[in-house]
Length: 424
Image (tube, rainbow, N blue to C red; front, side, top):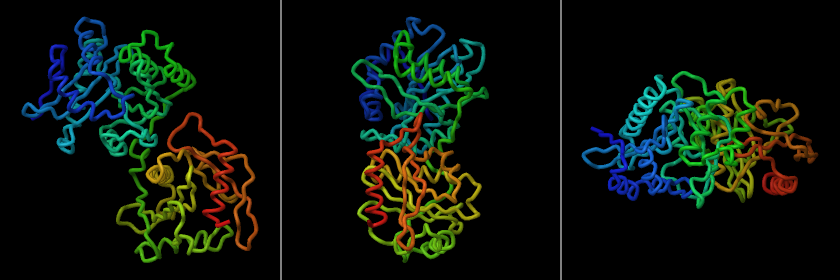
């Protein structure tokens, strides 16, 4: 049975043991790590009444006297919301339901705060998680894709706005690799509520007396002031953990090869945009990926995708959906899968390019973040002619507004595309 303890300033020994044994290991990025001294000071300030109607908790979870996890959380009365700064389960206790139990206890404590401060149940719970599409170069304690899926299962959604955590101290930098996720008890995530939550988080958790002096908060507030609503997104879809199911093809002897090639032959093989089928089996000097796609894990092949990870950018080859995948919303999660693969190939990749024929409607690509570049671009066609075509670009992950490459960067990538992809 899990026992929970809402730590007080008198529990310095237990808190120190947890901090030294687990907390620093679970927060490898120093810019995201709260100091032990600050934690003790926050607990002391709470007992002195400094938080007023707000509150602060460090909740330790133990089994048989051994700590198996913890949450650190703030309650803010004005927006009647909580912010989970940190929730972790030690590796040996993962997969046992301990994380969900710690979350439930954390939400129970926050709801008590809400009833005491406002007489109403808690309206929202927010949390910070690492954005899987923004690698930091610092090893994470848990695969950020797995973490996103866990928070998805717990009922949280990503909030679609540019969130940056201000620096926790003068010796640390802002954390720009985070997503703010949230769960509502029924009230919508309005821009004013989210702005109030971020304001109070900066004010009370980072002790910046006037958040308007904080550049990260000013940028967030300015963005939210222009929003009529806050969009949310499924965390599972964001990281591509939904259909279509992609399987890497390893060569012409692969069991999916013939059916995937048959689809390619039907839709592209005889067109001016097609390439010889042997191109899918050749060796390239950069990572090349060729996937079959399915709507269900055991279903028939229902599409294909091919792409390259070049030196400084990605490049899309072919994407094809059969009737089984069309109209299912499969493009966005497929793009997420492709971007995760590109980052695994080269974490420095910041974006990728695709070619879109004049006969193809670019609207679906624009809807998921691609922008047509104002360049004259051609590809070799059958017979040796040059074929005009749109060149579109998408930065990896989410950006506000989209960060586009410079003309010099576009020129370098086009040169590599022609050399690597088209052998010119």
